[in-house]
Amino acid sequence: MSDYQTPLENYHAHVTGYLSQKCPWLQSVRDYPETETELATPCAFLTIDGWDAAGDDAAHCGPTSVTLDCQILVLVSLNTTDERGAGARSYQRLVRDAAAALSVCVSDSALGMNGHRCVFVNAQPYGFDPGLDGYATWEVRYKHTVDFGDDLFAGDGQTPGQVLVGIKPAIGPAHINEYNRVN
View (tube, rainbow, N blue to C red):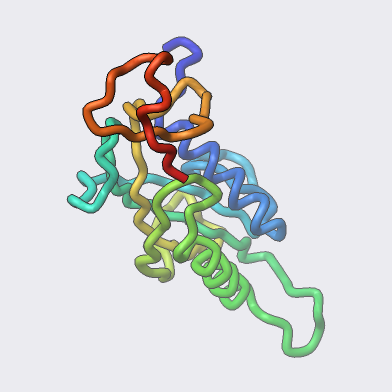
């Protein structure tokens, strides 16, 4: 493919940037845990597991509205220690607390985008994945309705300066006085 970015590539870039900004304690935020090297933790991976057609309440202004089924994996190394000394949290508590913070971050958030807000679904320990051995992993699931495609009502960037209404008026600049201005 050329330089064209798919709507999902744009979504990934936007959400990973948003999470990096809102959760500066994360060492990295990427999409899909496909790495061969040791990770600096805590870190997060965004995945999109699928999507469904959005309900009837979604905008119908040209774009296709879909509800994405999203997952954020948050990882903490099993070698992580909390430097606070006696009573310090274990890596299990650290990963759980990180998942809780990410749950709050996405819950009812538009993730910095215009439009629909996310619906938090759940957070829980992540199941067995041999590629993530050496890390305590939790998953945070949310749904996010997004619009893909061109907005049929997007203008050329010019905002109307005034709105005029008339009943069966003659048209054209010569008949401007036959209209009533709407404030």
